[in-house]
Length: 71
Image (cartoon, rainbow, N blue to C red; front, side, top):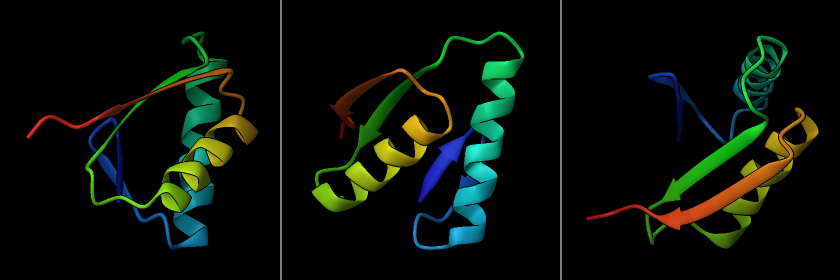
């Protein structure tokens, strides 16, 4: 599950991932920096993190910072 601007997107749902990518593109088009701060719980698989990073990059994100979500 991904949250962007308090909206939830399911990583396993291709339609929702398309909506996520569209939202990222619109934020970049509005002049926001093409960066992503990704905070993930330890239980999130590496594959899911990479799937999100790749989707963000395809949407135009140039820089991705990854960290562990605090408990």
